[in-house]
Amino acid sequence: MSNEQRFEEEFRDSISTVDEKGKRVWVFPKKQKGKYFNRRSIVAYTLLTILFIGPFLKINGEPLLMLNILERKFVIFGQIFWPSDMFIFAIGLISFIVLVIVFTVVFGRLFCGWVCPQTVFMEMVFRRIEYLIDGDWTQQKKLDKMPWNGYKIRKRILKWGIFWLISFAIANTFLAYIIGIEELKAIIIDSPSNHIGGLIAIVLFTTVFFAVFTWFREQVCTTVCPYGRLQGVLLDKNSIVVAYDHERGEGRAKFKKNEDRKAEGKGDCIDCNQCVHVCPTGIDIRNGTQLECVNCTLCMDACDFMMDNVGLEKGLIKYASEDEISTKKPWKLTLRAKAYIVLMFAIVGLLATLILTRDAVETTIIRADGTTYQKIDDHTYSNIFKGSFMNKSNEDHTVTMEVLSGNATVEIVGGSFELPKGEIIRREFVVKMSNDNIEGPDTPVEIGIYSKGKLIEQETIDFAGPGF
Image (cartoon, rainbow, N blue to C red):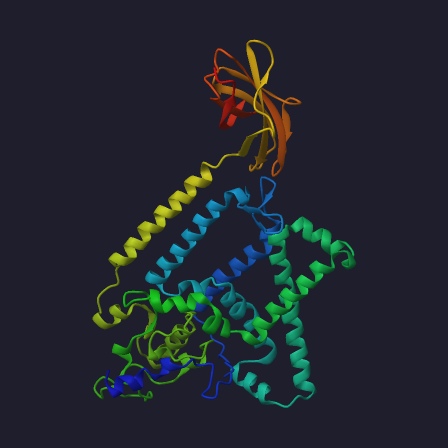
């Protein structure tokens, strides 16, 4: 690497929000609007609407989404999942990881800029409120340097008070996704003294959200989020990112009216620094793809606005791959990306198959403790078994049992029973068999579990008999 190239790459040795002494450099991004911002706003507010109304939505009487870690009950799109379904969650997690890899390889950090909760809340909620209260970036800088007088204190109390209320609403919403909206309503209505632990948890979560969106901000993306670190491993020259077209933009020069920039050897970049002023992580996109870039498109809107004002072609900063900018060839999927996509569809297909073929009732059968076989008469023997029946469906079942094969009979102690949704019930049952059908110490018998006349599961047991 030449000295010139080494100098050009020096910006990668540090992050933009920390100075040479290791002190935080506070970012005051300029307020920006444009085509891409408007599109991101539609996506963001749609996602926020879904997030806040989600706990109230039901499918077949079950929540749209509930991850009750305390009771080890998980509901996704109205389907109940229990600890015994953890292998499905494992495959689901693998599917999500592969999906993230595919998205990053092909589309860079598109997720970060458009649907990441950190970006959505920070840029579309908290930052919007901050602009209303503190003003645009220049006013925010003045307020930050201002001594703590009555004006600044009033501003801070108003902003931080609103931030705290929003953080409290976010914490309660996430709690509703954990324990369910009905349980949350009961806690809210009941006396706080009966839920000290829950109250402490809510205050802690609220404080965390408040601190993240009030002070920590872009540091989540630049120093904490593991996805940002993965970017350096997953991206290649064919990945689509928010990119500066250096072939068209260099060399940079201030704009002058009635000049022929091409004839004078100037690029289209007018060195206005608007792309830097609007960046929420404080980087200069013209340096190339960087760890701190979350692909929020604000620099694209800012640059397009300036290009339009000076009569130059838009798209100096755009969605593009490095290869597309360098070679001017249209973007296309690489073999690597295609392989990831095929793998992703294979895993998602397996996940869908497992979910669709999942048993409505999961049955575990063991022999009754301390028993083998009982002789009823000279021709008949019996075995006692214990069954654990877990209803994983969204409807109640009336459970009965029949022998499917094995020339035996089965009888549930106490008769058929009701198995409510989401419940686990244990019952003993007796299997009887004629000695003419006993094949030895262990004779296989297939038992069918029925609900309302429909076979919902089948199990094979070993009938213990005397060895003839």
